[in-house]
Length: 325
Ligand SMILES: [Zn+2]
Image 1 (cartoon, rainbow, N blue to C red):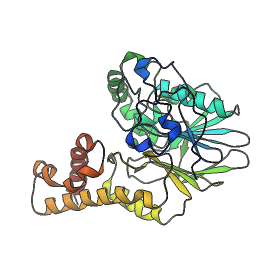
Image 2: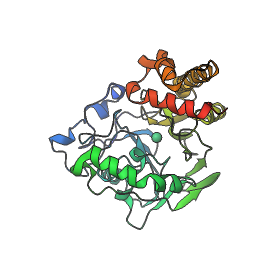
Image 3: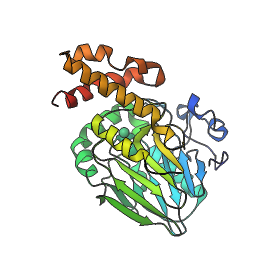
Image 4: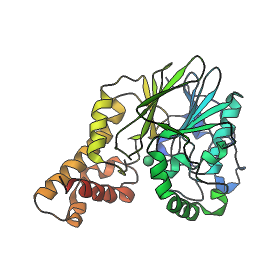
């Protein structure tokens, strides 16, 4: 259900990653930020279903060159209002998303929904903070983001540099979601579901009932290695449940704009299972964390981008969680 052509103009998207090669619209619009893309130039987006537009961030770490454009964000257009789902990793990227929305529709942006607290998904919020938009998230996100706010801002201003970080500040959620909550956009409604601890302790999914499209946030990684900041056991349990639910397609937090469900989650499940089983076996045999980190999950090395950057950290997180069981 992907329309290849959609609303591509000037863009902050950088050199195309191999994973966007299926999308000519994205590939043709790569412009290096460093080469002088104007501030707030519209992000490239693709329509993955009627009224649903996705910008694909490229896999990478925060840098001045990518301005924090390293995760997916998007928006859903209803008859009366627009809902934004995630806002990118800086005010600049948020402004680019807002400009992309304005190329599609002039309807009011009623809600900004964050799928979880990580900076690459929430640091663009500032671009939408004009008093007319409600910020919505898992009821635990305010606490988690609040606890890390200072550190996140310090780290990200350093990683992005003055120009790319300019205008970025944390905008806290105002509408806490407990369980599920429905938002009416006019002739379509979206259902938000707050989950138990998995990728983080504040993961939220968004289902568009009109098209069966589900925004998975970082419960789903594709290409980019999953990162564990919550509970590996919880994540595996949640995936097992979500697999049973129907979806016409899903939008990962990192990966292509849209993917088939439940096939999309198979590689992530395999990775988390390998780490969980490997760490559990190592603990049982009396290995230490450092021995563990040398051996567990290495079969997965070639399956993921950014493996070197995150895999050891994942093993450590799994070890800390599982050693008390
Ligand atoms: Zn995340």
